[in-house]
Image (cartoon, rainbow, N blue to C red):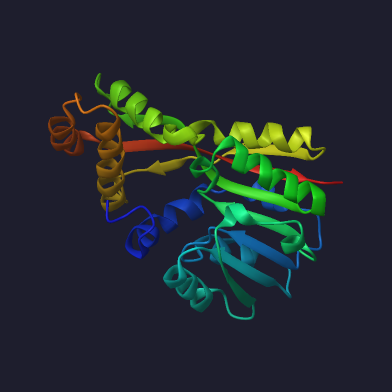
Amino acid sequence: MTGEFSPDWLALREPADADARSLDLVGLLPQPVKVIRDLGCGTGSLGRWLAPRLPVPQFWILTDRDHDLLEIAADRMPEGVNVAIDERDVTALTRDDLTGADLVTCSALLDLLTAAQIDRLVEVCAQARTNALFTLSVTGDVRFTPEDPRDAGVRDAFNAHQRRDSLLGPDAAEYAAAAFAKAGARVITRESPWRLGPDRPELITEWLRGWVGAAAEERPDLPSEEYLSTRGETVAEVTVGHQDVLAIFE
């Protein structure tokens, strides 16, 4: 993989992300949604997907600790959307940062956080009574067509790698949903899997390389090079599980 947060990788996955996110949850957002804070925005793919689906006017606060990605995101937001950038670690968000915000959102972020970090984020949203739409958290479910008896071992090793250093990894969406419910929010979740087929061979190749590479870091004893070289030639389709979480403070 060209880098988990590189512009090239983010651009490659953007169409699959757009296809996977739950439109149903967008339709359930309480209106108005005029001020949106996007956490860990990367190159802004979530904003490009969500902004056209919300009424105007809109003001987006793009938040990330990578200055270069912030510049790309701000430059590529849809025309007519007002934008500000906020370069910082999203785990340092405070209640005051959400003053006036109608929605906090993110994409592919929760699984990179610890339980304590998600608790803090939920607490801040609850204090500010700011609704949250968190999309594309991995669930650990990966299914191939055709199947291979080696898939399960690689999947388990990858999921263990995602849980390293107390990160929640594939448990993050479920954990966040429970934390929001405990904080008094009405919580709705939807499955939002990637469904990758013959029309996205480059994405399958890059995703598979990163998936197997992470598994090999966790389990150096796995025959990862052999698996990768042979598996890449046989995969016709792969479904990668994700979940979207909507939390509404009524």
